[in-house]
Structure formats: C-alpha cells, structure tokens
Amino acid sequence: MPAIGKYVHEDNIGNWPVTNSSTANFNTTDVNIVDNKIAVGIDVVTGSLIQFTSTGVLPAPLIYGQKYYSVKIDSTHCGVALNPVNAVAGTKIDLTAIGSGVHTINVGLGSSTSDRQETIDRAENLVETVTRDLYYPAVLLLTLDGNGKSRLFLGLTPKILTITKVEDGGIEVPIDYIDFDDDSIFLDPDVASGDIVEYHYRMRIQECLFPVGEKNITVTGTYGHATCPPGIKKAVIMLCEAENDLTLYQRYAPGVQSENTDGYSYARTRRYISGVVEVDRVLMPFILQKLVLGAA
Image 1 (spheres, rainbow, N blue to C red):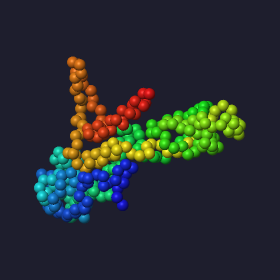
Image 2: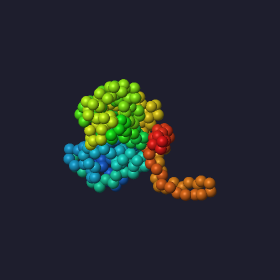
Image 3: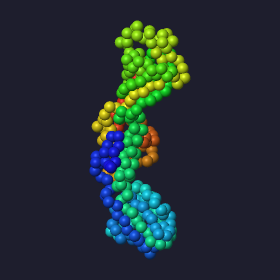
Image 4: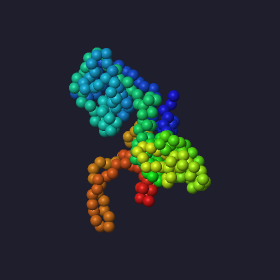
C-alpha cells in the first residue's frame, strides 16, 4: 500500500531515495576510528539513511537500529552523520571503538513506505500549523457553552462546511431551524415564527435558541476546505522534496537580519515559518488571508 496523505500521494514527490535497501556486512577491522570511516564495500551516497546492527557490539558510539545519515568518502567507504545537515556538511560522528563481532549496514531505509508516510505527514502537519487551517473536510464535534442568544460562534479558524446536528441540553434542534456561515451557527431567518414558538414552548425557552449553560450545546458537522487548494498541495510536495534533498531549495540563514528603510538601518530576528524560502512564498497568501480576516 503506498504512502498517502490528506493532500498528496507519494507519486506526487519525484525525488524519493532509491527504493530497494542495500545491505552489507563489515568486520571490526574495517572500522577506522582515526579517520572516522568504515569500509562497507558498497557505494553509499551522501545523505542516505543508514542503520547498523551487529552479531556482537557496534562500534562506539553507534546505537543498534538508530537512524543515521551517510557521508560518502569513496565507492567503498563512508562516514556516519547524526542528521542530514551534518551529512551534507561532511560532519562525521567521532568513532571511538571498533566493537566486536560482524557488523551490518542497512542503506536506503528512508524510502520504505512507512518512512515516506512519515515524511508526508510531517510536511502536511507543518503546513497546517503555519497556516492555522485544515484543507480537507474534517469531522466537527464540539460541545460549547450556550450564550443566551440565537447565534453562537464556534471559535474555529477553519471554515464551517456543514452542520448536521445541533443539540440543546441533549435535545436535538430541528436541523431546518439552523443556518450557518464560516464561523457561527444561528437561527435560520426563514423559519416560520409559529414553528419556533412551538419549539421554544416545548423546550421551555422563550427568548433564544442557545440558552445560557455550561457545555449544553453540542454541534456536529464538518469544517476545513471541501477541496485542497493547489498552493497547499504544492507547498507539501516542496517540503517533502526539501527533506529528501537538502540542496534543492534555499533554507533560512540563522541569526539577525539587517535591513535599511528610508535611511534608517535596524536589525531584527529572522522569523521562521516553514524553514524553506520557496515554500514560504507559496504559503504567504494563505497566512496573510488569515491575518486580514482576523483583523476584520
């Protein structure tokens, strides 16, 4: 079964690591703790996900089953990096002991279905966190305090898509009485006055649809987006591609950014959004839209 997210399929991402993992055994004598390199006998590309196992004790400080990243030295030797950034920079882990027994290196594990799914999930969660929105029809189930009025704001950032049930104190409100907009539910103005009076009488409520109470209103429906905007899908794909290839897009430089405006120079801390410049440009309209709506 392929890796499938809420917005993208693994086939949308074109730079996954090699599908089949490579495996090779090496001996303690193949571990060079002076130059921090290992003679594995196979060509391991820089940035490949690697894991180690052993019939004895792994070279220190390597940990059984932990994910590392390769630093290619030549067609048969590699170093071990703690993370992808260190791998690209050539920063190797300092090997302090050769271990014992026969060791095994497993290469390309990042291209498994489960790892592809993790990459897609990370990208989609980051996009939702940055934009503070959901771009699919998510299930809505809220229990709220009644406000003594006939309009109740749900306090959601994503837009309401559908309302299928509303209950007052456990008693279901006829759905024909309910209408909604992006962020609230309210009494449908087209409901016949005689019907709502009868409902109020049965509920012993004379003035409002949502009586004052603690957690007495339950709302069921969906919220988010009916379809995923193309820009969101593009941003998720780019984040996955950026994780698979650290050199593909421009990343933020750390530290303080200096700017000059109208003859005045000042420094400000750079704000991190997605961590990738090109992705931020794609997401910015979605972020600005939220700010404008919030101000209104």
